[in-house]
Image (cartoon, rainbow, N blue to C red):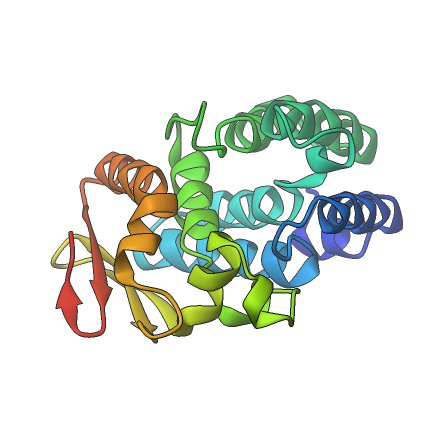
Length: 219
């Protein structure tokens, strides 16, 4: 069986991740490199583990999380679908069986908020893990006066964590935000669609999704 360790140490896959992030640097996007994809993989793992999924499904979610943004190496537009096609080629070459490969590429192809849907457990975990990664360290621009809204919102987040309560059937994104850096309205301006998608993904698990900002439940 293909493991997360094999995938995350594969130099070909890592090269695509590096170049994909380099392309996004030139376009002014926040960090989409190894910090983001590794965090996405770990959070997806934690979600499924807490909800009692089997070890192999958890491993597939980690793999999907690590590879989910490689399509940016081709173009930001339709990067989810492009990444799914790339992941198919790479994982098929590594020997992943079709029944597992189908779950991974289905998840990758369904993670962008414009076209995404939580079609299986791996996809639902990937959606929540990816969309909940908001943090100051994702901001590359250090010239605060020139921040755009994405820079301001991410930079304003001082702490971020995702909590899964399997008994209460809740998944909660907990943020500590410096509202002097960015008003809370800015967060909802750019992340509302993503939070709605997280709610749909949580519903797949028969859970409710909540957003807690500075101790106040916003949704």
